Length: 153
Image (tube, rainbow, N blue to C red; front, side):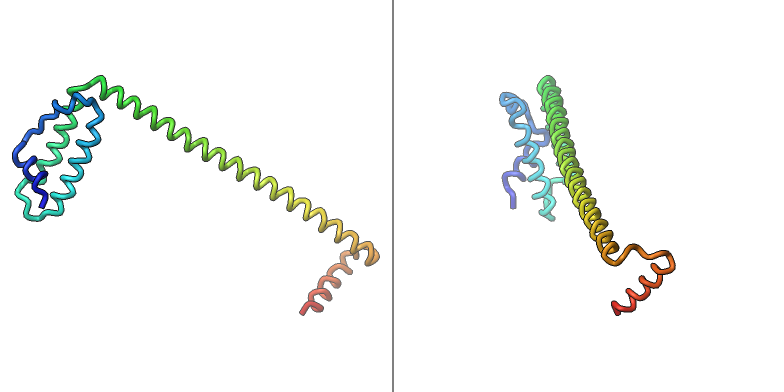
């Protein structure tokens, strides 16, 4: 079903990576993707004669040859990846901090709005008590609350 992959893996037990070194590490992602495709395609082929256990060791061997053949590039690439990861993480943290600051500001605005509404309600309530002739005493208050609840029903 996949004759090219099958032929390469059957004919070459040890893949030579040296011809790819002229392109430095630019070809490494292509090699990795080729092994991924080979692994997924061979996993789908039930009657495959190539041993599936040999594919991961061949992939590891190919990656090792890249690193061994270009140690300076491998170290540089590793360090560049660390920098890129740190920058990406810093961007995520900065985004999250901005989001939290926006949320904090929104909550403060909402609190101010609710405080203002509460003040207006307090003022309206006091104005209503003044119109009613003042606040009731403790005993009058309980009867007012009871009579108020009876009227609502």
